[in-house]
Length: 234
Image (cartoon, rainbow, N blue to C red; front, side, top):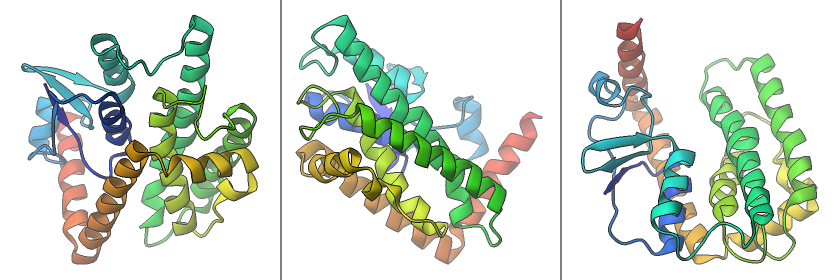
């Protein structure tokens, strides 16, 4: 199998962290050569990474891939010891993936916009602030998101909190992690975990690459290509 991924893609990072934590060695990870081009959208209709290539059968969507990998590589388990425990893990993962990460993903273009839209910034940032408060009431207090060990919840939270830490200050807002005591303690602790630390190195590397692309103008060209590809589909 092959995982099409990218360093700065937080959704890809979620799956990569799961692969690292489970010790899976027979999945190669590479950046698709056509990513952002019209050809990529022709080959992969959703037009986003990650994509898991299973002998030519292309599986999109990080949560779907994560659940699939958990089924075919059940050990070590990143789910719960009981059905209720697993439900709790999935709840935390959904907070990270949907309530935090999705809002950060939609907010990120404002960090490089020549003129920011304050309505968009306020709407999306307020959702993240509110949902971090909810996470603060649910998250574990032993260095992991749930049950004192790494789970799929951690895989979703690490890239999500990375985005919070880097995107909100870039749009002129304070980082809200520090005012949520349990989340702040978790964030400090999980960064010392070897698998989370590896993912954060990759995310920071991708962030620096993105900043350089913005400086030299190549990112704007890439976005124009992507917009053209979407326009062809209308």
